[in-house]
Image (cartoon, rainbow, N blue to C red; front, side, top):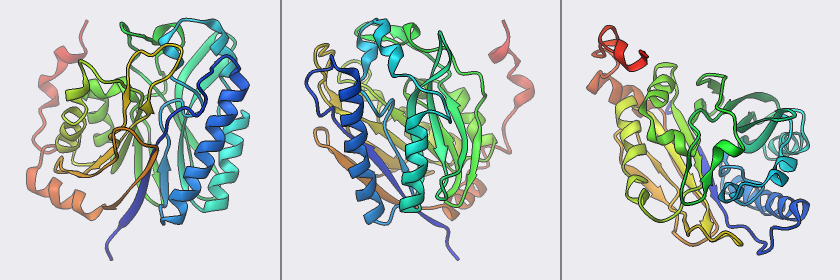
Length: 289
């Protein structure tokens, strides 16, 4: 019996042009995503991943401690609790990227994973934290992740998560592959410019090197008052051969759906045998001082 997972990605713009009222923009984004999650469920998706810090704008375009107030506990904060109810309602696995407060002054860029029964399975904390122009001041907000590269066993397959800037680093993707990941989600917030050409290069390369599916998500639109550039959407799924299966638009809010045949992973791995032919005893310099 084929193992087919119908998976969904959500790319969405900020519905509010004024980000001065933090509670209002957070609620507006949550409400918008609830509607789009329902659309994914109506299309038969069994797993859905939201975009990076889904409940707000990409506030890292500025350095302002007011945004610390939008962070929440994981899993005991209100947004994860809400998404547990939503997962139960739709019988859908959810990957929920939010701003996590571990304790006062310690914050992470985190994704929680919730199964179709509403049970919290765990979290991934973003490891690689950029701090660069124009407007990616993430070290002001995020501590580097310290929970490793977990893979979550679900009814939709073995799920790994890599967040935005992580995608520039092949080591974590390899760790996910070696841990058995079948689908790796990369929720992102990235704008048109120097790195756009990498958007459809790096993640298919991770898929090829590790023979897993990748779901890459990017938000859409521009966000005032910063206007650091246009978030260019184009969320997509690619298969274990690195071929893009389906792709969202550059401009529109969209639920991107694909049917992922997990049996293809075994077929591709048995053909290429990249894991068999690794030479880890020669890789010491990669982790040396």
